[in-house]
Image (tube, rainbow, N blue to C red):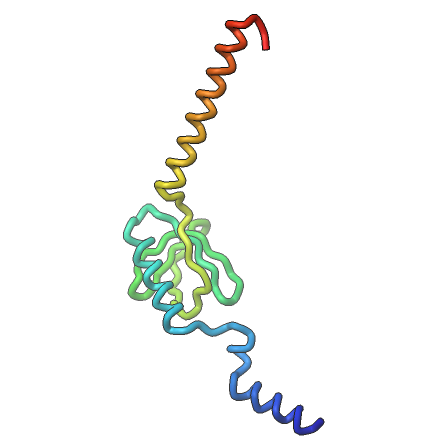
Length: 126
């Protein structure tokens, strides 16, 4: 029994508490975050949402990718964030494909409504 406890303690100390809790990020994840920041920051009007490992959620604009400077939407304060602290980075903008689908559905709704109104008016009631 004591050997099992010692084995668990050794594994725990080798792996580290932060990795077991999921609080560290690999270099690949950090590179992907940097790539997303470059893409989002290319358009200065585009807003971003940043979730940090600490659980904090920020909304605003990315000013600089080199030092990852972020301006908060609500307070207007500028903050420098390390890429290793970022859990998730997304933009708050709908893509072109989404707008095409929304437009198509709206057009289909208008056509269906026009068809129903025409049919009801021509046949004396629905």
